[in-house]
Length: 130
Image (cartoon, rainbow, N blue to C red; front, top):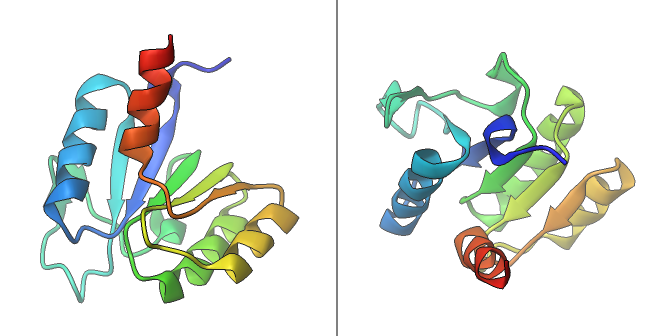
């Protein structure tokens, strides 16, 4: 089993304080976060010391998991880019982000797909069970 320090999560979106809180928590513990956000919408080149990419395709290193903080309509595009990359294993759409069509596409292409759940809450519950 791979350790947390071997996993790369991508954040698609940078819209609210909860996302920032989660990003800082994860970075400080186990995971490398690479922020993804269309630069036309976000006028920052770096977030928390990490380069911001326009989309998943632009990231030069391996991506294991994509964690989405965007509107449901964007999820299918994120899944399509993940398929194009060929290295994404998990797509996670946060609370109130539901796109069943994107989920089916991800699963048909061998990825795990989670939607309408907070990854920080799920992570906390998993840690507390140990």
